[in-house]
Image (cartoon, rainbow, N blue to C red; front, top):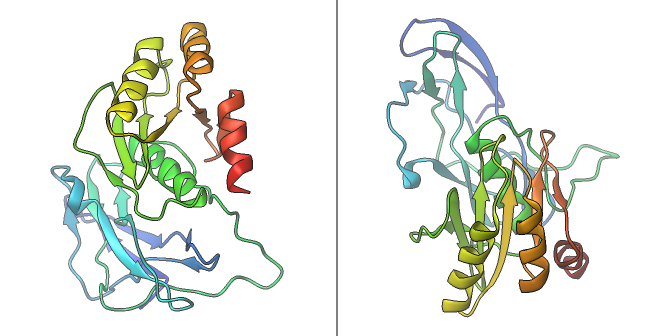
Length: 226
């Protein structure tokens, strides 16, 4: 296992230094995907959900969680996957004097980052089994965990609408689950009013990775998780 490797772009051959990001395990210890310096990087030419994640086992508590597969973007436009040692545990052990945020944070620059930030927040709220949901009731990416469904709108310039909120709420009602909405582009006034009426928590995904609550239901949800 290594924390940093040189990754050669699968298209142009340019070399990039890549360091695996850390994510918070449910026990609070940071874990990172163990990189394989002997592996062969490959260009990412298609996106398949089950191939986007890699299992990382926490050496502190033994929990295995799914986190985004490491990849590097090259100036030539190619995205290259970084080989991972699947059998090794992730890096653990907080830096002395540091505190791992309960909800974690990753910079949100892409749609993938937006989904990661939402997953981190949901896990911080106690939902360990977050997964991609098959349903599609509104624009964006649907997530689900036991007892809750979520919608992530990853487009920065698009404000979520009242219809988006209502479709999410109806889908949650059909599954007897709670729901929560994450948006990079904020919400229209009608969406805010509809969410207050339906008691749907709304969060804005900030560039720094924070999921900021924008209505009372979201504040209550965060407070309930403690």
